[in-house]
Image 1 (tube, rainbow, N blue to C red):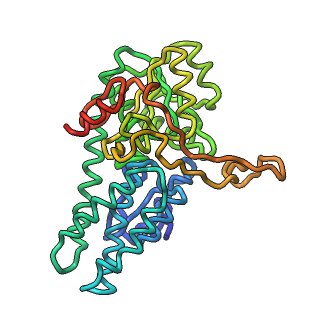
Image 2 (cartoon, rainbow, N blue to C red):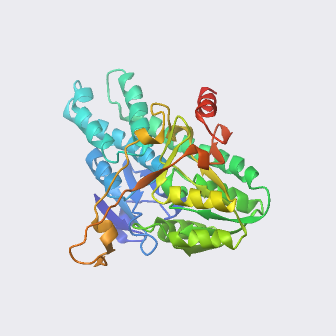
Length: 363
């Protein structure tokens, strides 16, 4: 992987025509894939150039890119890089040579279903190709996946904004904005659309330990859009709701089960429980590619755990007591019974359950 700081001479030499912002976090240009390194935001705006599928898989694992839709889009472009390398290795046997790369890519993050979904969609195209160089056809499909995600986010934004009803403040958790998608965002797409309609007073962004996606990424996105945002610790959410003027909790999702159970960043379940107690409604915004009809409930979804040092440290500084271990699950499951509405690009599901989710997916 190769890093390029915005405005550097090296970037200019590559004629990389990118202005760093949330809506251009994933860029295919000059036959290369570039990712805005989300680990460095908001203090540094730096793109990483990926030259191989293996580098893309590492970027997904190491949180250069995160958010289920963004992971899926990155994976789609990674398949293009894998096909390029495999075809260079053998013009006749490239479909076999690509398989190890695809397997490694699929294992980069176990919870977000969009990763598997994107690889399966790209593989379906790959298997239908005639003999010859596959890159152009696969790149066209990856770009199509990218475009479709942005379009879906804008539709979700409009649908979700209609549910806000009256001018209010909202709470969001983690980052489900343009950075986590192909552009515009899921939860933040709803917030952007609702703000444009004059329905948002303030967004309270949970800081989201241990990676601080709320304070580093969500606040960065919203402030750049001129949307009033205040950062708070997760533990402050109950007090914020108790004081009133919060009408909705709006979050994204990394996977939704067939019964409407929602897997999202750890702490979402806590927030939904507190919201129910205070009469605050919960909205989940996610594309239908995030709905996994192969799992009947959230209990069947694997929950990724990461290095305990992420909890025991803050950046490079150790904050945990010496000799103490930590438990670091990345996601939790919010039961469908605690969700008021799931918003997708195909429409909304009020009070979701298995029957309503099945009907949405049939349509």
